[in-house]
Length: 180
Image 1 (spheres, helix red, strand yellow):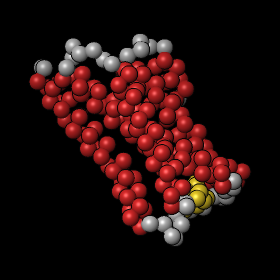
Image 2 (cartoon, one colour):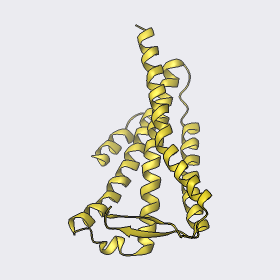
Image 3 (cartoon, helix red, strand yellow):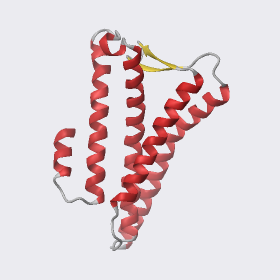
Image 4 (tube, helix red, strand yellow):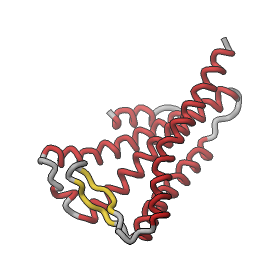
């Protein structure tokens, strides 16, 4: 389904919504492919198998999984906020480049933060049979302040977008009802 959606949006006019939808379908396709590794593990009685049995592949999978899931959420925020902005200013020109720059900066920040944290804390990837997927295992010597910081960032990266989309939706509803 993501491939079909991607092909549809790529052939449309190169405006901001179509560009964002193209990126969203690409990220969703990455998540779907990453989820296949979990499905394979679940179908083989939660065994790590070929992919999750290798620590390097497990580490790369963990980075991809976390980056793609956070980026997917962030893209919904960008889409929602851009829609609200253009409802408030309907005759302003839709500029794609600033949105793409924000998405790129967010992506680089997420990867650098995750990799930097992993290197600083001496964390490593490990397969968790209960989850049927890989995750980061922190060393016991890890700084509790840094681990707390990463937990806060993780929560904020999932909770804050929810409030932004909710607020953006309220503004959109108000603007739409006013125009009637």
